[in-house]
Image (cartoon, rainbow, N blue to C red; front, side, top):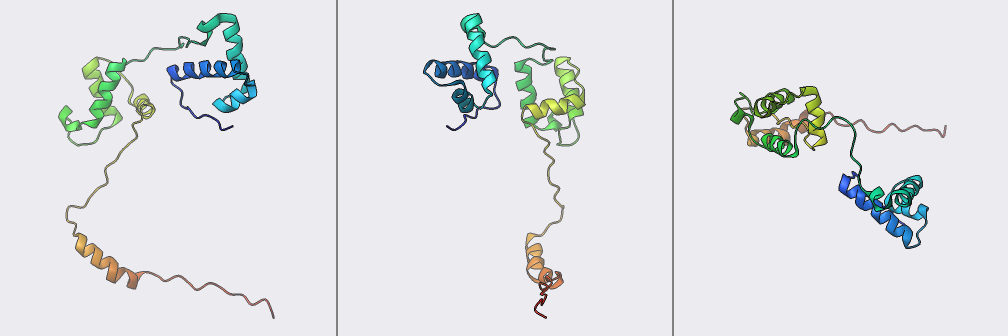
Length: 171
């Protein structure tokens, strides 16, 4: 049986996976088969089964997470991610490149929330934003001249590969 790939699991997906696992168990699948199908350990399936026996259907629901609540709400997060799509010059910056310190300043001004720029890099990565540095282009660039050089000059300058070394072991 092929393993089901649902990673990364969000909270609603995890809840649906637990329900699916217990549905399969009720249909006669073994714990090992369910675990392999879902790509989890069989102990996890056993734990879900125990939670259903002890707590009923409420045992399958997501539990509140411990830890500090996020500094930005979901709406604020969406707004910050939209800012990244726009030009930083619209926010008063000199260049067209977003940096974590710049974004931290804009978040502070807009929402009054102070976020360390080092933390912000990881936060952006978790939200699917990777560093994008634009490729620099020379001001004076002639594609036809470059193509001609590559066609005529480069083969003349380029070193040719050495012929393979042949050893005669028959002596």
